[in-house]
Length: 304
Ligand SMILES: [Zn+2]
Image (tube, rainbow, N blue to C red):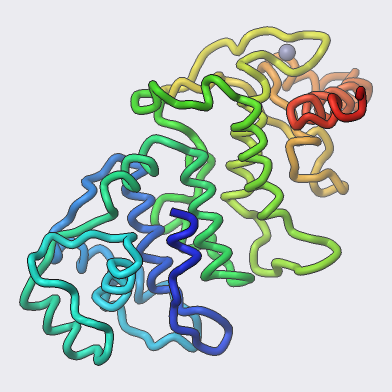
């Protein structure tokens, strides 16, 4: 699917690609995450998308929230299916396309395998949303759209345990960790090269980073002096551990799992308010780095 997104050829306006196709995809991904119906009537598709497309666009993009044009483009890119016997007309002339959708009123949605993947896998979700952001948004702040479609919280990177029985990552959690780190790295604001001025608090990046640390913890407190199991699990089956930035981002800490750690509630309280918090922070910084290196294979390389 990442390749299908890369193949899309959105029209560009001053400032970058038009956002319409991206807004439609993000809306559908938000629905998949919530387990909402994959296929909607054209009437409901229209009613849900018009306000989103009206609110979220580039300044040079022709205003107007009609979803027929982006949905026709996604259809041609195999990223949307429409329940209709006549093919979507080629995109020359908005009026003809508009008439076709009015006449056909086609129900539609994401292709079923795509929907199922996006429903069950947090990793797939953050990978695909990252591809959409790279392709369409660039430095344009996507966080308002993400929030509007329900993709603005940490849960975007969570799996649905009820649906992921045969998750191959059960056998290879290190691989899952590395895939999540890849998303984190892609979204890392660079201090050297390209800046992302609009994106101050990147929800995708933070969700992927937090999820990777939970993976790495294996459900146990990562304080080496503790190692206690999480006291409970969330409704989605994830261990209740605090994922913490060992050094505050405000004081130069890095928003990256190499400087993040999963702590049980006791250790988190000590780290936040305890008299020994300064010594603990040093130990946790070392522990996070060691664990990150072990999980990404750096230690094996050095040991050889
Ligand atoms: Zn602990």
